[in-house]
Length: 161
Image (cartoon, rainbow, N blue to C red; front, side):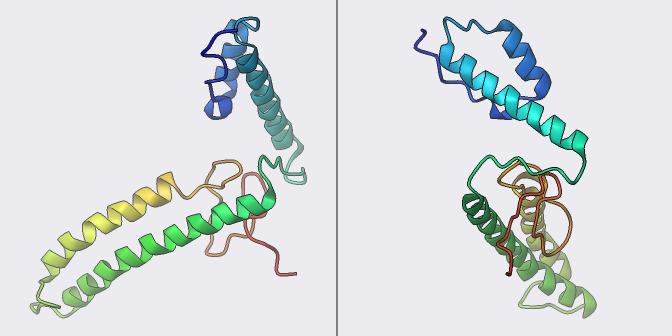
């Protein structure tokens, strides 16, 4: 067994990369990595079977559901902060633009445009890179109120029952 054994995280590998790694791994030298690779392939195969079964299939849940919901709640909270930061600069820009030729809080509409740019970029980057389902790591779907992930069908929020 090598001292590097167990250092590889296969959770971010594509299905093709998993099978390529499986073809080339030395199971005697890296038994822990070999076991983790087999588990990752099993998870990948389960996801493919789930997709083939259609939308009625049970979701593959990789974490406890309460942990998924807590993580998604934190993601939503950060999303709200990003939205508020952008709105705090966009609203003054809109007001100064609407009132043509005047300043709002000492800044012209062009200056407000420059001020609202970085929060807009940060907000867009947040939505693109961080607004993901804690279970499947994919975009959870459109809508203001997401109760379940559109990809893996796991409950992102506790039901109101």
